[in-house]
Length: 91
Image 1 (cartoon, rainbow, N blue to C red):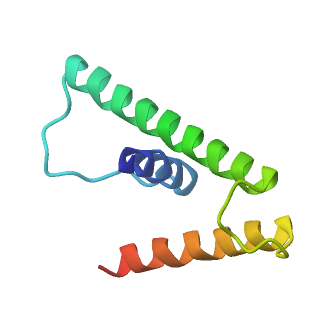
Image 2 (cartoon, rainbow, N blue to C red):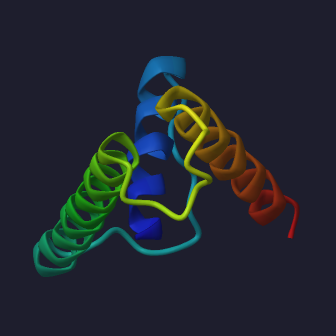
């Protein structure tokens, strides 16, 4: 699922106008097709998992305490997701 980060990398490079510098040789067309297939597959898996998680949160199919409102569950999910992302970035 980490191939989705390439979309962010290319987007930031496009907005900033900077060229992405690499020590690797340019990809062949087969490598490019395989690369973008992996990016699209990762984006699909990530989108599906996010959709399933949000549906479960809004339908109350979680192990959250019964008295916790849905918006608080969603807020804690987003907070924990951001926290894990920062911890991964610090590795």
